[in-house]
Amino acid sequence: MLPFLSDRLFLIGAAVVILGSAPLLVILLLAKVGLWPDPNPNPIGPRILVFVTFWPGVVLMAVGIFRSLLRRSGTGGE
Image 1 (spheres, rainbow, N blue to C red):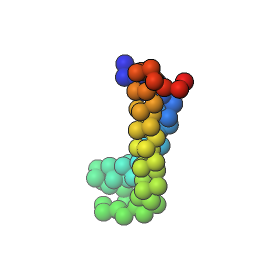
Image 2: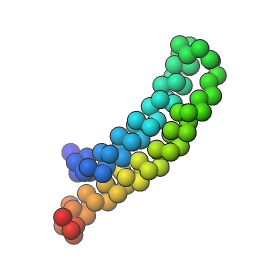
Image 3: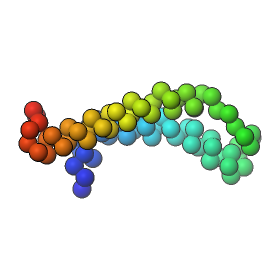
Image 4: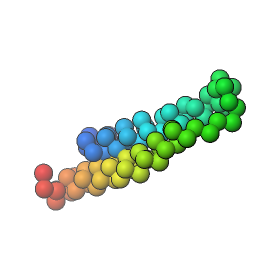
């Protein structure tokens, strides 16, 4: 198992990225399939949600990976 999957910050970051990107991806997928009323949607709200949540989630995941590597090498403070 990958050691960073047990780190809390990594899991929070992954959840932020997934939950922040999911509405936009669902709208785009439904428009591609033809189930969305507009075939060429311009979803501003979900796009802003992705803009606000993506990079903080990536930073949290990177910190979680870094912490798990420090803990694994034995130099971590925990």
